[in-house]
Image 1 (cartoon, rainbow, N blue to C red):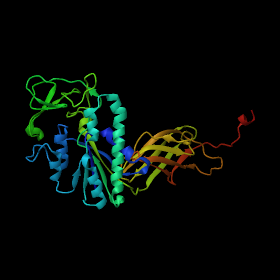
Image 2 (image 1 turned 90 degrees about the vertical axis):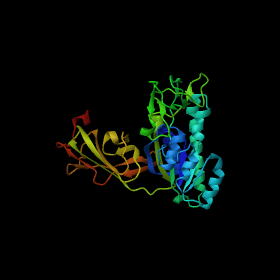
Image 3 (image 1 turned 30 degrees about the vertical axis):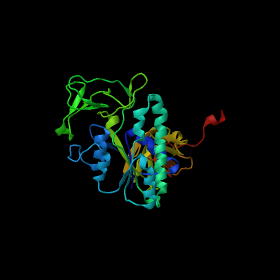
Length: 370
């Protein structure tokens, strides 16, 4: 297993990283991103140590050293950014069962950049794409890449945007981003008590969007990318699993309906997804229904291992002139993506049809002669 821990990778950044990894089917998603919660406060010295040890920071073995936390796992090896060459070498020789690449280059963006818009729109995607390239190089260096499972995870997320700095009143605190070590009486902060939150000491966290300090500031003294607080951007992180290739199970779609010809009606659509990833970006084309002849997006996803049934409004078509019964077979296809990556198409099941109530039509109309 190659376990990639991207320091500071938030939920939306994780999704973007997956798009780079799956581009041109370089990797396939085995398990799409699932939400996890960072340990509070959302700072590396607590969150990453807990990620590796699966223990609360109040444990007697806690130290401000993620590497010592990883050793407690008792298996595999952790490689930092300065040890990429060693990671490549060990992958080639299949030295371990678990390889952990702990990269800080994404989090460091928020420590050094001073132009927020440039950081977010240019540097951020550039670094994410670079991390994806490195992951692919690690996978390709493995002797049997098809057997390698790639797990993407993070310790905490980042605040999106810039924030104002506040100075807490009262007790002197050791401030770090959006948190501080110590108990504050300032009403703008909330106290995470040591015993209640499993921490080595009392910690005060900013309630709102402000920060107590940061590694870097914009030219007008605004804080960039601070974290350590309670906002969803900081707390909600993801985990996903990829491989070089995945054998997908068949997806089934059935369409049915009943109505009066040339009147408004409903079409019932059932999509059965037996795969471990969701179906996204659905596009349905049905030859016999006017609004669907050229295809139409379905504004919904089908979750992993789920069957979804829903209705859409249509104009019920007429039966063909030579029809001997009131059933109209439906033909067409559903195009979709597995977890926003691999694009696939399937045809409608053979029992897709509509029951149509229709008064006899001779096919003769005076309008044909006018």
